[in-house]
Image (cartoon, rainbow over all chains, first blue to last red; front, side):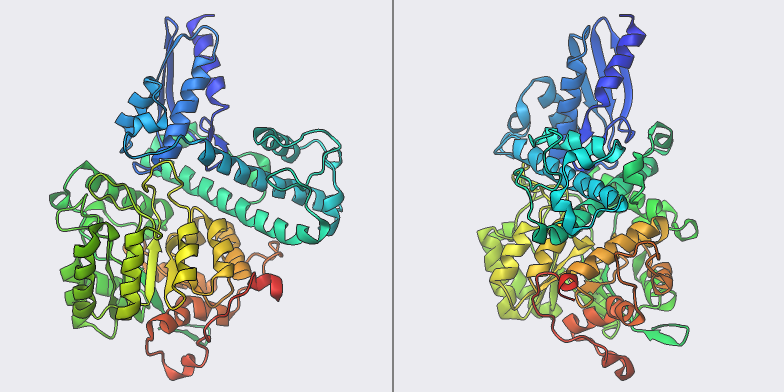
Length: 241
Length: 342
């Protein structure tokens, strides 16, 4: 593959890396500033909306970007550089050395970030579930009736695609005859609990949407040219904002 | 006092600061980055004509504060919520002596809350007792993401925090303002998690916990604990300015808060000087939830009055003009979800 194609392949791979708090691609958010590949060596530069963005989420994005770029055929060395963050040095060196989060912050962290990631994957699922339910309600379903809806009832739509992906992320069934309204453990939610659960899911969605707006806005305030690098939010997300 | 269309509003700005973020006060690069980050917040969410030049923003002094809040900003009473940030700034970020001098000069207009950090252990506890006496403290501001030596933050459930909260009970410091930030020890935990507030609210039922930024970026977690703990309140700092840039999103936040915790535990604040109260008060009084967001109840004048001042007046025992005082809500009772029970 020629260098330019390889660079495009790395950007495409980075497009699959998500900000765990915002549940959006780091490419769409404008967090990726430069990607170069030469002689099989990829360099990726990342920037964040503030110098003080939470270091654990920053670490996850840098580590995931590293893994994504490394997974591209023809790339055999990757350097990810997080710019202008208070923990840039620790994170960049830690990811490069494969030290893990605990190894990157000796004495400051006692565990890896699997639980943190899982917690936010669950929140992302909850937000997508709420969007999917709103879609069904628009199609004529009642709130109480949602406990009877199966995935096959969800028409082809961005809401359906997003929900299926988030379900796969946390190991929930994606078969067509699986119920739509399930809890984090995959258990179907009884009809009498659906209204309150749906209200709470709405709050999760409002919170995530708001954070995404805030972070996108701050990035363009911090880096005025970043607006050109951001891609609009997905239609099913924008519809609710 | 703000008046519009024949209605009067008593205004309490429950979160203000008098800071010094000038270069000469910065201890290191983090101090410079911190004030720059605040300036980005300010620029990103303020109307264009309310944006300050950077140099004025880093330090503005007491005279300008009085003008922005009380002459131009309709505020009747404001409460200092100072962040120490001693690891970033030589004389701290919030200016204790200057704020206290201003408070003594205008005791009818200003209340000074101080801060504590439980990682100072016994020495800090002794200091808290002295501070309570000197400032007549009714409240404290806690910033759990504050750096301290090698530590990147603390939790309200840490054993030393409990000792400080017990001292607050004894000293009559009943308003505990909690501000979550991006770091906490250990770093692998979600530093914005509000679960520790849930725990202390249960264990200290005679204290009120005001969660700044209504828990943002964890609005949902805040709403969930606040429905169950009647002594947990939400401060609107940071949420307010969305009224200008993202009014529909602001409507959703207010709608969610009113649904989950009701109208008696939400408090206006500008987070001055990140934002100025004038435009926030004007826009909030004019604000209505868009008709197509029909899952939320409309915002009534009485609800606005409570949010803009009467709720904070209750917590701080402020003298509200008699014609408005009758609308001060009684102590809220615990409910699972205020909206759900309506």
